[in-house]
Image (cartoon, rainbow, N blue to C red; front, side, top):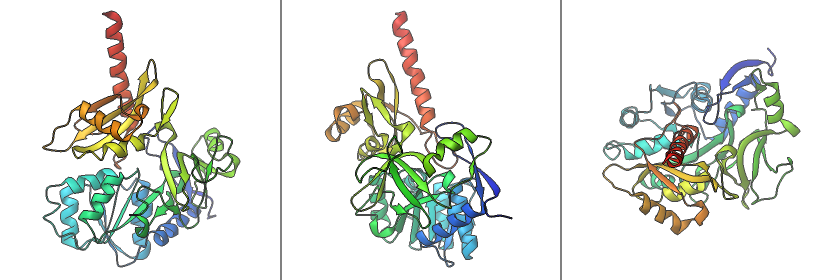
Amino acid sequence: MADDQLIRLMYTSGTESRPKGAMHSSRSLMGNYISSIVSGGMEGTDVEIHSLPLYHCAQLDNFLITDIYLGATSIILPRPEPEVVLRTIEKYRVTNYFAPPTVWISLLRCPVFDEVDLSSLRKGYYGASAMPVEILAELRERLPNLRLWNFYGQTEMAPLASVLGPDEQEAHAGAAGRPAVNVETAILDDNDNPVPPGVVGEIAHRSPHLMLGYLDDPARTAEAFRGGWFHSGDLGYYDEHGLLHVVDRKKDMINTGGENVASREVEEVIYRHPAVEEVAVFGVPHPTWVEAVTAAVVVRNGMRLEAGELIAHCREHLAGFKTPKQVHFVDSLPKNPSGKLLKRVLRERFSEQVEATAQEGSQA
């Protein structure tokens, strides 16, 4: 079989729209396995837990199949239930674990975290969405012997694109790292021209990891691959150290009063408040500002938080137009089975509330 023939369909996560079928070949998958092993410091002596769905490309192609390739030990759990994960680490002397930020947060908040022996855990991987810098600092403090890697990519990249390794976690917390082996990454403007360091543009890749295209969608495939680059839909920039930073998804960028607000920047500030367990920031329609910056917040158990207090906290660290106009307290944030936040669900939910309030006002 030729290495560029379709051998697998992997569907995107559907966090923004209906999932798309990414067509992958043996070339793209094998390239990804090699890049993951080299960039992630993986070894045949590793003992790893796999707790996310195996239809999620990161769990399957960055971690499970690479373990099989190396002859490492794999422990498969049905779900990332925090206490089960922690006790499994202790029982089997697990060395490696991958999870999105939402799951790492759940481990840190689990009541048994400080009771179990986690000394065997020496490699931790995070990805699928941005890790809040405050959570990263807490991980390093509470697990000082854990070496961390940030894996950034997307389903269309099979999925690895760039890696921030252990030696740069502290000095460059929040960065997506450097292009993985076999990957070339550029930042492009609206005309698909490269931009200089420090300038935000769309993140684009060239790599043998790349899919063949989207299933039954030649128009979307052509648009994604225009100019010879795969356009990721993520906004980012390179810093003076040559490190990639992801600012936001294009569709998550909030347009308020003619200014663009990156939801991640606001989330990072909100995570600094000690009462915040989780947060998602998004835009909802506004009759004057086009969109209003809005936050959905989960409060940590045993703590209290008022909307006014959180807004005042944000004003201390953010420009006025970036400060949330609305704060909604929720019991949990909507996530897909792989732990990614579903901001489109929040936008729909709270946009409907805005519309209902407006209708009530017009009828009064």
